[in-house]
Image: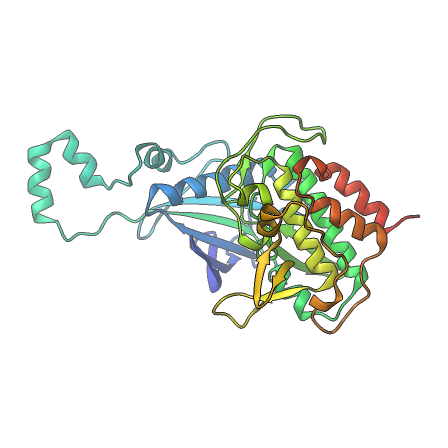
Length: 357
């Protein structure tokens, strides 16, 4: 790693890994010397986590830097020891990690040797029982976004309708691109959208593909009919069909985008349990309790959402979205997935609503 990159500082930590800011050490096909990159370390401790890492790696390779609003992967390495990194070829998955997922366990060298030579391995285990398991980690090198995530960016800026329109246009374009490749993100939310600040304005990039899924089906803008069943996502952004435990399609992403768009356009925020940090997100309020929109619609499909809703907007206030955007948000948040626009149609309607001329 040191020959190609140097780690500068930790910039993020989640349930599965740590993200560092890094610098390119030497100029090559991977970039120019001194350029900033984001380097994510994913520890491979159990098959469940490894499966998510491989899914993220596969999806990021599929996007192949082909869209400005999808985070780009530039390099990846498999760590096989404390200071041993093996570069991964772009057309291959790491077989050691694939084997761990298929077998449902992570093995070290001693456990593999024990199956080949039981008597010899028993002596080795007795003598070296306190030696830790061989270190495994997957390192992903990606483009660096200097504006943080969308939640931080929007709430740190003065309200700006033009900037908000740019954000939702860029995100709709990114999701149309992903759905066109047969990729369902399944965890769209402000935390998973990064912002890169440029002279011409913010460029937003969809990131974090650990829960994403590749699906078969139409790739010409029509709704994919392949059903997914795993319950995943973040509470305030999950579609009602997921809350109900039913199968769902790529249209679940459209619902998540609807919640995100509504929150951005009206600057709607809430406080997570045990946190003083405001988060962007729309919801239904019942007394002191906040219910995610998907959960509320799951229990009451006839629930009427009122858009715009000034009472929930965090100061300073900005003009509410116009009638065309309000109508589009209601369609995106429809309880029936078939009533929501496809990603391609969504991109067209946003363009018309933002710039009717």
